[in-house]
Length: 346
Image (cartoon, rainbow, N blue to C red; front, top):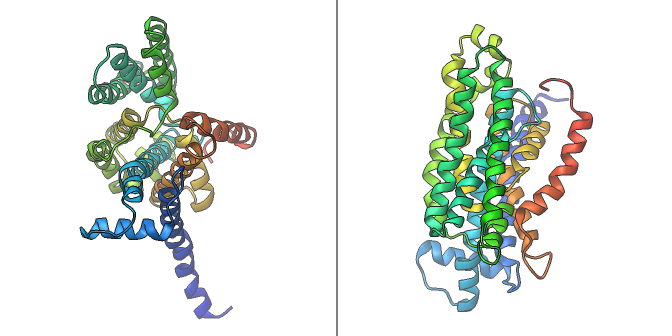
């Protein structure tokens, strides 16, 4: 093997790991914008987007422009942002807990956001208030879990957080069930049920813009301190021995992952399994180094949810809720993961 071929290998790996996935994601975006009940050629989609980007008028059919820009573009944008956020949160939680079998809802964030949204629907509040309650509910739920973890210091802190998340999640789930029983079965109950299954049908570009600041704020510390996550995944004692202040960084990472998860759930409803399966697949491809794992999870999570949403709105005459499809894909994968995973972090 020549020296030139050895030198070309890193560049080839960079192209395979970075450029090709980005091109594939761009192609998937164009296909998603073009596909639906009203089909639009991909070339027309590209011209519509180019004209919109430059602020020019387009000669494409006005109906096609409305479908692409006002109906499908918000869904595509939301899919990219939410899928990336949930996958990033999942990779963060799995690194903190040193276990590839945990997901963003392990600390009750999904249950808390669900309770907030269900309460808003039960009280017949406007959509903006429902989203705000969902966001606040997710943050409050994780705050309660972490408060329990700080109060109970006799046990392993990671195990305490997981057990507290399970317990508080169960309490929040029972409150959701109570509200479903009390809800109006003709108006409120169908809306509650549909929201809990997750959907992008009613998402607007304004909704995406509203959650972007929270997404950026949550992802920023994950990017800046990615190398410290590598040390924290070694374990509590090992990380401290290497100079990592885990008592400060662990709450920071948990707050960041919770922030992006709560923001995502507040807009789309509960979309499960992405934070579980995508980080694990990314880890199998790029390895456990969080500096590579985080961008890989972001990219794969965005593409995965975009593909699932495309199937959800085209596979049947009526739109299939995203939570159903992600569970149909994620549950078998989870069973396989349980059967093949090692006893500890791998």
